[in-house]
Image (tube, rainbow, N blue to C red):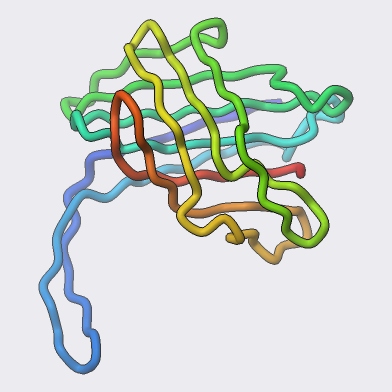
Length: 165
């Protein structure tokens, strides 16, 4: 399987939003993220859990894990902590602890919508919680996707994607 990944978490964005006939100028930080893969998952993989976190210290963190189809446990995980200047630190599997702590039942399936994430080498220990726990996408592949809130040693907001539940 071939996978390529591109992420630019500190893009300046601006535009206009019209609400109830009143137009407002808006600006902020955007995040462009794209993955290309030669196949969806290997037969030995059940799904993935992916997190894009914008932390209050002006860094961004991408964390993901692939889950084993037999055990449901993480078979591979990786993270990258990124600075605004474009530099980053790769974080290996042995330095990442990612544990689901709360499930939300949707259409007879349990989706982990609150997680504990710990990366001791970077002094990160946070709880990641879905803002809308029922945000399952109505696709042919069961897919949960939506915004998240981050609390703990760092605070912030982000995005979570879950498949294979």
